[in-house]
Image 1 (tube, rainbow, N blue to C red):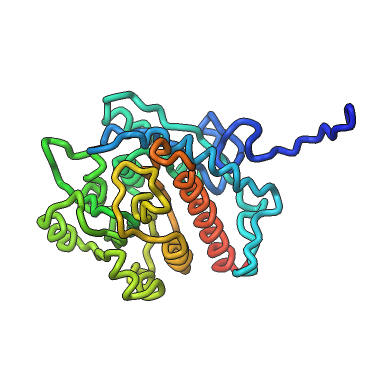
Image 2 (cartoon, rainbow, N blue to C red; image 1 turned 90 degrees about the vertical axis):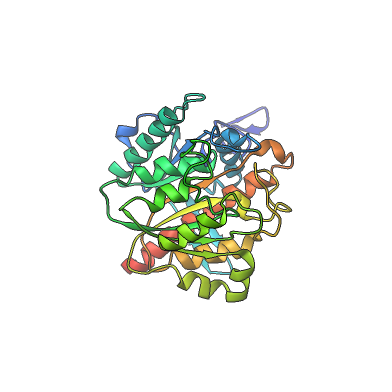
Length: 322
């Protein structure tokens, strides 16, 4: 119906309406989840050692993700000749885990509860942080489930055991993960120059089964060889710290580190990493929008997540012969 010469049909443009991840449906009651992908915000940054602000990451990434609200037709990639994330992939937004300011344990428990709800529903949990400490409750949510390997894409090793009594800050998550009997090992890529972890941490990480590669080492090896180092035959959890990227393209983060990846390096690594592997969880952390007035960091994070989800479900279809 037209009114005063204007079409009153809903165009649903990216900058209109309520902002959920990629403008997907919001599910407030986590016990009614029925989806392939459940996106959870984890706006917690009390584990940060330097610049705070990642608590605004989920909002920033969600707002940026509306740019990629493809509708029912999905997104056609002419290079791959594939349409990704069509209507057959059901994505919902769970909203945010409840955060109790200054209370790490209660906040982490609420994040864990959200991931557990997604897993009970059979959905792929996708958590948007928040600082990297939110990975700790994410991994804890898999207690009792099939062991899996972790691919970490990050500037920092995050393998600190304890510092000043802190064991659940954003320098600790990979150490906490490696201690879990349901984590079979870690592949840590992008690790470089000034790190949050001392030499002893690197030695401990390697002793606990980590494969550690810097940006330069990845470039020397090449993406196919790097992806081939990730074990086959075991499920894979992917954790991405936005500071893995060069701050020239991702300045909106609390601990930027020069010498990072460019977009296609990470994209191609992820595309190859999901081939032949069951992806059981994803988190993307450390986006702090206030340090990037252009919004480019949030757009990068949203675009990376959308492409990664497209790769995951295309690989699943290919594996099932559909």
